[in-house]
Image (cartoon, rainbow, N blue to C red; front, side, top):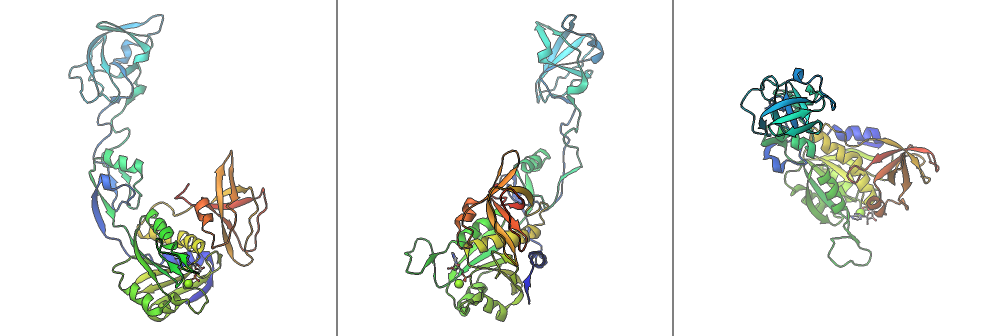
Length: 404
Ligand code: AMP
Ligand code: MG
């Protein structure tokens, strides 16, 4: 077991556990939003599937219109029309035009389009006040070319990508099964919301903030409830959990006599590391139990959320083969001071705004028991060991992508 490791080492060890392949399932488009593609998608069509017009106007032969101007309009005979989806069957000859509407195919014989704003209709004729040009013709395959790959395995299906998959001709998509993530809360003092709170009790908030984090990262949260600080009960619940891709526990991993999660995992599983040089979340633990990776999160609400964001989320991204990074760093100007930790990397909670430049201010009380900071904040402020930041200084921030 390793201990006292850096944030970077911890992340590497966590990611190394994301070895498994998630099964693939096929879903209709309307259920695919927010899922992760498990196959590369080749376009089944050209879009547009033939040269079409990007404007409402008239299709004609460019050479007939070269000298056209307001002073000297060119007069063409309108021989028909072509609304979108209803191509004009005939051919455009010398001195002729066809009325076309955005998305309509360019009729045979025409090689230019003029927008309706530059014309005047006179019965069966149209006056062109400017030359027609090919620039408003969208060539076949301008947007999508049949046979080309536009979406890849590991791409998150965002609204734009879902639309693109439909445009490419797909009705159903192969996606990875959501990773199943068990969430177990421990602690004699922890009480389920809705029950009366005894003296010294605390409501189980971790289960629900972790549920949100897991689902936001594409996982399916499996709530395993809460157990007392008794090793047999912890083990029993973990072993009865059914198939999981990741197990999260909260509480019971620090130095106290009642920190049973650590003991159970030491005795019945394999602990990979315990304790990371970070604040909050120093007691973080990584283990395996019956082949399932276990992130032993500290019980403090901020510690468990920050630790999941820094390690659990990247783990789930890796498992889903996601092509987008789990988080990104930006640089912002501090509007308030931020205090670092002497020998650990510190992650403070901030409110990130943009007013001509990125600005970040503290959410207030930075204690790891103050969950309000995670509800108010939309970014982590990253401070290397021993570094404080004063007002006006530049500082690294990691947007909490699920709120930005
Ligand atoms: P522990 O890591 O077990 O020592 O717990 C650290 C702190 O987090 C204690 O104040 C606990 O009461 C609190 N805590 C532990 N589990 C939870 C939970 N599920 N929800 C909210 N607070 C918790
Ligand atoms: Mg505890």
